Amino acid sequence: MSKRVIIAGGGTGGHIFPAIAIANALKAIDKDIEILFVGARGKMEMEKVPQAGYKIEGLDIAGFNRSSLIKNIGLPFKLVKSFLQVRAIFKQFKPDAAIGVGGYSSFPVLRLAQAKGIPTFIHESNSFAGKSNILLGKKATKVFTGTDGMEKFFPKEKIVVTGNPVRGSISHSAISRSEGIKFFSLDETKKTVLVVGGSLGAKSINQAIDKHLNQLLSAGLQLIWQTGKQYSPASATGKGVWVNAFINQMGYAYAAADMVVARSGAMTVAELCVVKKPVLFIPYPFAAEDHQTVNAQQLVNKNAALMVKDSEALDKVVPMIIELAMDENRQAELKKNIGALAVTNADKAIAGEILKTLQGL
Image 1 (spheres, rainbow, N blue to C red):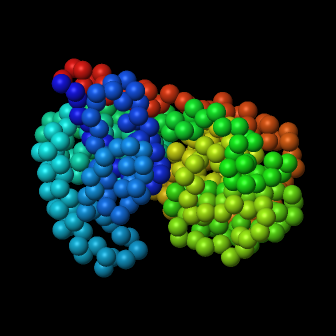
Image 2 (cartoon, one colour):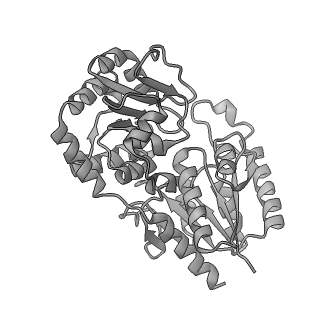
């Protein structure tokens, strides 16, 4: 009898792409395993998961809105509704295990699985665990973490340090720089800067690039710029700039890039280690416990990345990138040091641990 696994979570690429990598690794080891994703309606996972070839059920759920308390009036109703929806999904799908990757839908799915005595697994990518993961971790079968030192959040005996799963299209990419440059219709003779603010965009990074774009281009650089859906650049016209709300083919973007400007979410950091790119991090300052600064600082301390504060990004990002572009030795040093931190088998390690538990059922 083939095993059935629910994978719950999403909201950002940092949750969705590792979840898909885990699903692919489970399928690679056991081709008969049945996988169902559960996400939040209206969120990014409802589009990205079917694109990866998996079925997804959407819950009517939302998180607590800190900026507008009035918007939280319907929250208890949504929570109750989502628990009823999860109950119906369980009744129909009959999962043998549930995996939570963070995001709104993780909590009701893992909570119900734990109440029913179904094995639950958590993947916590950040160096600071999310509140719902901490709660769920108490009864989880195993907790997979991206970094060590997570005993302050989870029971020590449940932690398995695996690193963070990087999607196969990046970790196993054979795309050349030349192919990457062609994909974005850019010039092979120029140094290319990849600017990504995470899957939802980053206002301070976008504003810094917008303000100083001419300076960047005058220095002989060209640009691949992912703005996110919320931002429309004022200045991004003309030669040497590829701009879009989202990059669907990150393998090509990383292959084309000589340098990267990015937020320092755990998954972005994991990918940049694997692709070995010199990077300037601008940590998102409002992340829980300022974990993005912690993530970036760990690399800066190992001379594996550069960092600038979000509050100083507007006028520092472009000059720092131009300076790095002119310094081949510094680029080589950053590449070597960030590459030494790469983890390429996290998805296989997680899948192996989950299947070991399932075989014992």
